[in-house]
Image (tube, rainbow over all chains, first blue to last red; front, side, top):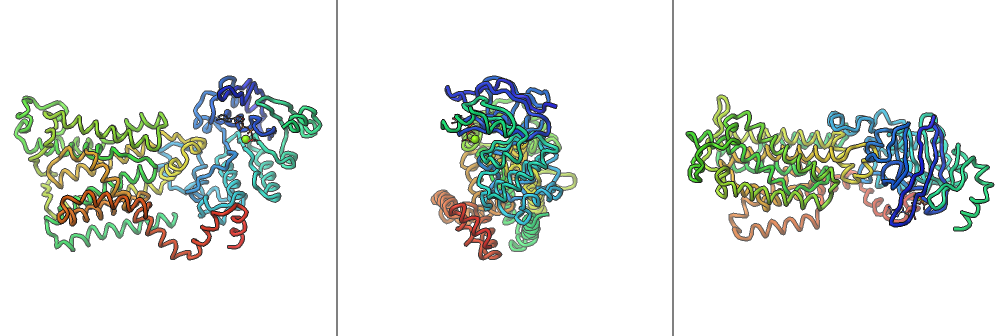
Length: 242
Length: 368
Ligand SMILES: Nc1ncnc2c1ncn2[C@@H]1O[C@H](COP(=O)(O)OP(=O)(O)OP(=O)(O)O)[C@@H](O)[C@H]1O
Ligand SMILES: [Mg+2]
């Protein structure tokens, strides 16, 4: 089933066409990797899907529902989760508190008023274990290393449990072992989630991607499996041309 | 729950015991002194209410005095009607011949008590909806609430026939509850105010440790990030504004009972800024600390303003500047940081390391 349908998407920033007529679909349970040189419009594409940026044209459908004009928190409630390129966790909150914020199946104030700050986290202890942060659950997120911060945000997205998860450069700053571990986590996530992953690390992409889209100057340059992409002449020139 | 919650509960219990037993004993149950202290306790409610919106949610409400004033006038209107045969005296002096419609329901005590909470909550909520739907944040919240305060005070002063204008509402009756006429110089009244403060603090402690309080802290740090988790940030901000306004209204009602009059100076800019100072001195992150801040500053004011009649406001300003510069988290910050240092003497050392490069962070992380 097509979970996400992006059709003829456009956005301009003062004359710069950051995304220019982009069309693609994502299947349920698929891991789609977005590649492309710096400034290709990968992060902007994710911004448009999650509602951080409003498109100047085109349509975005989630399970058939048009979401491109919705406010970001409505899209989140419908099942879009986002990890940002610059790790965005709450530095003044502890690891456990960060996770509790992310557990947002009931985002209304009445539900929030009727439970303690960490009531939900106890059920989610396994998630911290998975990213090796259980020993730091009372640590302020601001005291974590860069790699740990990346993992905390990944843990938050697992806890948020969105249908469609948008990951912007999740392995940046991670060691090789950490990257491998992340690939494993992503593969297991794809059993019940759909992922769009922006990534520069080709060995990571090789392990996780079901399909790859290469972007250049806001448009799609190539689409296909890893072998198809690696042998594509246009892709080679786009990367070398930069 | 968390250890922080335990500490707050212990602090609340100690605080309640001190104001219930310690303070009255220290004052030899003297009616006049207890009345003075009850005044501080009423102001402490206004201060802890500000801590909820400013400390927890990061919304600096400079219009706190407006909602305080609404509560204060609600109570004063009721007590004025109780003190008058028919039309309140000042209305006659202003050529008002018939009781204005909005005064009529204040004959009822139940209505008055509800109005003293709900009118501030409603007005606070209205301002909040207007601001937060438009995603106004930061210093603009302070400017808008300050502008609202100034406009509201002007309105109250100008409607002389209805509000007593510059003179406020004086010559009030004592509140009569079923079976109890509340004398503001009695021990019973002191306990009424102390009880109200304790309940308000318990509500505040629960709110800050609930998931609601957690989401507010998340919003304070990064409102946009919080929206991407599906939270309607404007609703949360509006809710805490309403709650804070209702608590301020509650404080205002008690304040009128303590002083036995209501004055438009309660809605003044300098009073509103004073609340900010109490809250900052105590520590805006904790409702108990903010309440303490109000009590401490007002006790100082009580002692020092007799001695330095002219200089007191200057001194208050200097205290504020010093607090902002040297203890930005207030007394609360000093206490928690000291406690942390005693618990983990090595912590300081690690913190400085964390400021260096990220590779260094990894190394120190493995060391410890
Ligand atoms: N809010 C904005 N305002 C103006 N220009 C923007 C904005 N966001 C992105 N851009 C521009 O749009 C283009 C695409 O940026 P984008 O961040 O999507 O690239 P990217 O593919 O994610 O690159 P990278 O690999 O460096 O992260 C860039 O030229 C960028 O400067
Ligand atoms: Mg990017």
